[in-house]
Structure formats: structure tokens, C-alpha cells
Image (cartoon, rainbow, N blue to C red; front, side, top):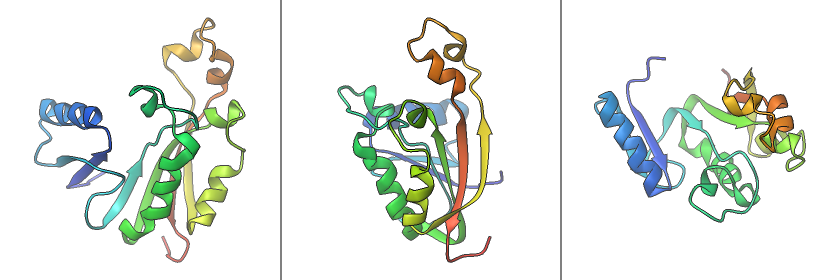
Length: 163
């Protein structure tokens, strides 16, 4: 998409190390910087992309932290702070599954309500159905939910700007 410089952040040292290994292996070190930290690097950006844990729930291991977001603290914290890290005319892209809604862990309209409460409007939504092996594995205890799951890319902008 023509992005010349990317700063990737994660609060997990293991995730940062993994991301850095991928950047090095793919030869993207001139374009991508990986930093440990909560949510945002210093400064502002034209595009903020976030792929938070998709399920509200208790974290009991480092692996759980990639899947569960207790009280949706990460999601809510990102949405509350995103506008102050966005350049005028910039966008926020949020990647979310509706698995939490399918499992009854999040109300259907909760995401759009969070967007509105944080001064954000939806510009577009792009959706994809799962094609991974677990979606077709009938022995998976989450099969019924996974077969219905939709992953969405929410393109957002501050309410007070034109895009």
C-alpha cells in the first residue's frame, strides 16, 4: 500500500522478538522497526493498525494473552488513545473477529458503540470467512462458532474529519 515506514509495537517481549526475527528474515529492516511498548510509539501516524486479542476473558498464560483481553482493556485502551496518535486525515484499521459475539461474550453492537464513544466513525468494513483447518474440523469444540465466524477489517476515522 506504499507505506514507507512502519513502527510495530507489542507489550510482549516474546512477540517483539518474534516480529523482529520475521523483519530480519524477510529483509525489511530498512522499512520496519519493532518496539516493545503499550499501544503506540512516539509521535503521530497516517495509519494505525491494531489486531487486539479477540476474546474478553481471563489470561492464565503467555499464549492466552494473544487470545484473551481481560475486560477488553487492550481494545478499549487503544480506541481511547488512538485519535491523539493520528495525523489529520489519517485512518485507524482494526482487525477483529466476531467470535466473541458468536460465543455470547460481547453484544452485537458493542464494537460500533465503542467506536462512537471514542469519537470514531466507520468508513468501511471488509469481511472474510475463515479458511483455516480448524474451521472445518468438526472435532474442534469451537467448530460451530468457527464455521460462522467472520473476521473484519474496520476502517475508522475521527468523527470530526472528512475522508
